[in-house]
Amino acid sequence: MFCVECGAEGPTYEGLCAKDFAKKHAVVRAPEVVDVERCASCGSFRFRSGWSKLERDLAATRLLRERIPTERPYERVTFTFVAREEDANNFSLTVKAVGRFQDLESVQGFRTRLRIKPSLCDNCQKQKGRYYEGILQVRGEGRELTPAEVRTVRTFVAARVDRSAEDGAFVSRMEEVHGGLDFYVSTNALGKNLARDIADAFGGSVSTSPKLFGQKEGREVFRVTSLVRLPPFRVGDVVRHKARLAEVVAVRPFVVLRDLASGEERRFKAKEVRSARRLDAERFEARIERPATGEAIAIHPESGEGRPVTPRPKERAARAVVVWTSEGAFLSALPADASKN
Ligand SMILES: [Zn+2]
Ligand SMILES: [Zn+2]
Image (tube, rainbow, N blue to C red):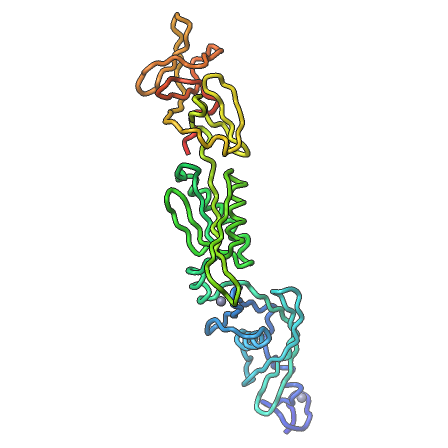
């Protein structure tokens, strides 16, 4: 037999000598990258057939076989490679593909990159739904959280956890309880860090209480409950503090109370105003009437009731934002919608 291409004598494959056969038929079409998901928790790789825990090089061999089809007319291809680590999730592979046709073996070398995408396998996903180590509790100091606070804290926690997901940080469940929120978190450190971050962002105090949970490999295991108490008051609240009526104009880093009768502001640490009590009060912009007596009278926009305003507005303003309590009407330093959320 001789080659129809070059005329060389010897064994031929579809009429070609081995060299010309290899020239005409590439063994594989080499991909630039091979992407694979790997479970960040147990290390399994995701193959077409499902998740499987294999050592990295074995996984790479299986992936090359799975992802790179044998080009006809080769009947079978095998791969060997050398991997060079670029970083934990990126490897440069120098691959040798050997294609077999009858008794012929054609060799083709190529380079590709193995890119590992951290993910979570089905099993770990399920376990994640149950597993927790610490608990993060968010409460209000002497009050329930408002619906707006519940929403804000949930969003805040979700964003923080997302950012540290690769360190095995997750929230396995979240419960709304007793006017507050409970988060079941994957590590005690995560619970503590979140508690501190929430207190930094929203004000409030943090405490932690470890409870012995059991033993793991001869080590005592603790479940730490981290508790954040958000400040007792919110901006806009009207409180009685040491027999004076005041409106809350700030809650962090200090609680600032503005005396409603004098207009004077004072700042306190959260624990110094623990004895202060919230009162029911309305805040709205009222029409101001000035009868001949020289008083300034605020008119309630719904009931039409009039009350003298303390302290008396200095300017000849026709309207003013007032705080309206059972004890009287007071000028407010805040906008009318300050306590709506
Ligand atoms: Zn030839
Ligand atoms: Zn897993």
